[in-house]
Image 1 (cartoon, one colour):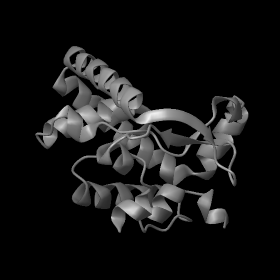
Image 2 (image 1 turned 30 degrees about the vertical axis):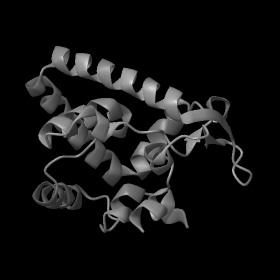
Image 3 (image 1 turned 180 degrees about the horizontal axis):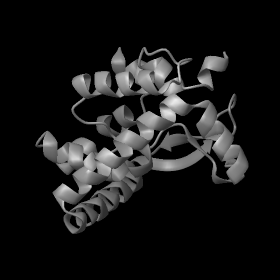
Length: 173
């Protein structure tokens, strides 16, 4: 199962997650550029959602969400710079993809307008607070994974709230 730790993003995308050569990294990014017109950055999720909303002519109601499978704050670990550097080196392919698309994402935010984007992110955050207030009764721990928060919905919460807490498998079904 070590593949979950070494270039896991590349593994999920169907690339050779063992190959960290410069030539292969260039090939992977080139292939991804052919297939993906837009890549969201998890570290900048709200900004990513705003750009997606505008690309697809969506409304805020189309992009509101309840965060699922979120770790509790007290479970987060801070890595030393040395450990972080080792992980990035070992995951060289994923790191290169991330850095490439992070730079590309930054360019998109500049083209869109930093100030406009910041205002829209603030609107989204307010709508997310509203959805949480309307849908969420409380958070508790999952029995098998107590470090991950589970959403307990208000009763009655409505179908939209219920759909927002479906996992990816149920949603796909």
